[in-house]
Length: 130
Image (cartoon, rainbow, N blue to C red):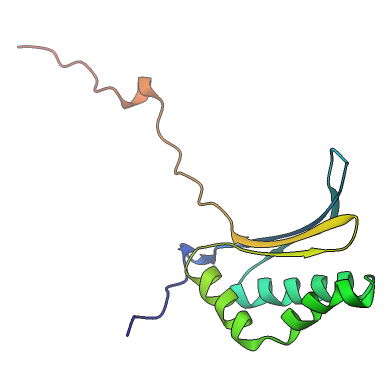
């Protein structure tokens, strides 16, 4: 039995989770952004994924909407999504219709490296020999 995943943090402020949705039409060079959100917890990131998935599936023909509707009711997959996000790994959901691929993502924001002192100020000051 493994220990539960630990939520990464950046000190006292929770690590944000970046959530994105985009449509990729076939034979097009650019994607079409469908939404973006920064969530403060894995659970809020999952909630955003669920809301965006619902919005997308509501606009698809029934046959193409079925995988998204199934995902919306799949509690085991929601638990897996939370485990990935909590463990520091992103989650991606892909939906399709006859002419477009829809990609929904949630992932932990990358940690920012601490600012390093400049090379000049990091050098030790010369000492005088007595």
